[in-house]
Structure formats: C-alpha cells, structure tokens
Image (cartoon, rainbow, N blue to C red; front, side):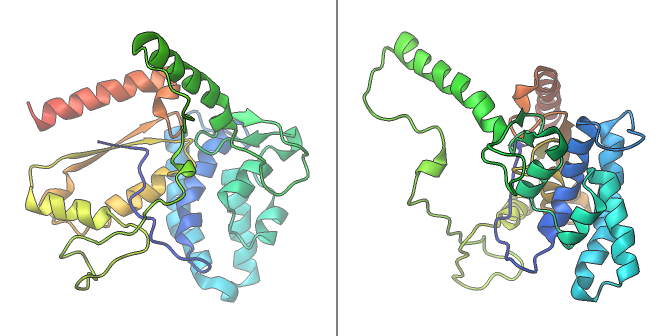
Length: 285
C-alpha cells in the first residue's frame, strides 16, 4: 500500500519538463478548491481528469517544442493553463508556461495576500509580504506540526513514562548525511552491471517484484491537493513499469479530497480505511 508516494527522484533540470506536466492537474485541483476558475465543475475528480488530458496532450506538446513553439500556439496554451490554474495569462507566459510548485503556491492567491501549503494546498497562510516570488513557509506543515509534536511528547511522558533531554526531530530534513544512492534491481530497463544511481527510481524495482511474484497487489492512495508527491506523477511512474497486460491490473488507485497526509481530512480518512479494507480482503480473502 503506497500512500502519497513518489517512486522516481531520478530527474534532471533544466530541460526536464515532466515535472511541470505532472504538477498541472494538482494546480487545477487547488484552483477548483479556492474557486479560482470560471464555471467551476461540481466534481473535482471530473475537473482533474480534464486537466490530465490537457497536461498529457497540448501542454506536453507545447513544452516539448521548447524555444521553437510558435507564438500563436504559446498564446493558446497559456490561455488553457490560465483556465485550469487561475493564474494570469501574462504570468504564465513570463514563466515560459513552466510554473514551479513554490511559485504556484505564492501566486494563485496573491490578490488575497495568501500563500498555500505544499503538503496540503487546502491550508492557507500569510507571508511577510505579498510581493515576494516564493512562499516563506509551508502553511500545511506549520498548521499541523505543533499539534502532532505536542501529542507525541504527551504520549512519551504520560503513556510510556519516557523522559529525555535529546531534541526531538520530526523531519528527515534534519538528517544531513542521508544516503540517496540507489542500485536498481537487476533486469531493470537500461540497467548496467553494478550501476548506482545518485537518486532512486524504484518503479523498476516494484515492477521486478510484481513479475517475480504475480500475486503481488499494489494500492496507490493519492490526495488531490498534495503538491509534495503529485498524483499525476505517481500515475505516470506506475503506468511505465513495462508490465505484461495480465499483470497491469495488479496496481489499483485511490483518490481523496485531501493532501499528502490524507488522514487530515476526516471524511477522506474514513474513505481511505474502507478502500484499504476492501483491497486487503480482495487480495487475500
């Protein structure tokens, strides 16, 4: 069971446009949530499906053209990006159609003098000023951090009777010697003998596991408002594992009106629980 997952960190920049393509449906979900689009559809799932089609089609084609994109096509695609994201056409064109997550979080509610969270774009915050290019912090992180850390300390002291003067580090960001190196599974596409990647792409490892154990089932749970691990990128990685047709049904998806921590939306938490229970029952009755 994969919850808010990313399988491929092995990307390069500049010139790597997939990250912008993967983010656009998530931008569309946030624009839908904050009423930044005209004629807002009633269902976020239908809206992001439209965004998927545009992102994988006309938007991807425009980005692949690079500097050779005709001016008329630039104008047309910019207007469509505006329709899905709520960002101004001028801003989109100034960014060469490529909007980074941090810029989106700062720009989409700029006129409201608000910034969005990264882990969960439903969270709003105010910044040191409304003119900056990037948000000063992650409103979804600060919105929950104090409550979770306080609850954990209470659990340590009250239930476990454990006391320590050591600093509690809630995030792996505090680990400075993190080892990201990855040796792909033998037989992965393009795998050379002994090759080690500086960053992991584990979709090939998962695919190898499914081939070797065809009874292995995978459930991928995704939040619509997650900008840390956007759902469209997860879909792309899981649909590019080169599985035989008979094995492709081993992978299932679930989608929830929440962010990276799906459980922060109580209704989504209940839906996730029901979906996982059904998945387990079907996989191992």
